Image: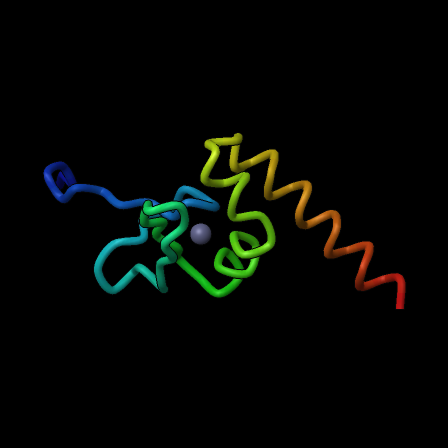
Length: 76
Ligand SMILES: [Zn+2]
């Protein structure tokens, strides 16, 4: 079995395949299209679209953003 030749869109946040039915949504930012695989990734992307668009390491970014969310949740 081989997945080659499908174009292979991947989620801009977590890097999982996000094409066809597996793609949850996508956003346009700065004239580019960013595929997103799930509501969680959409939420994270929306928190820092500029940084994702700039090509910062998504893994580091996600950890940072999740940390922020945790703080906010526990701080109420
Ligand atoms: Zn994702």
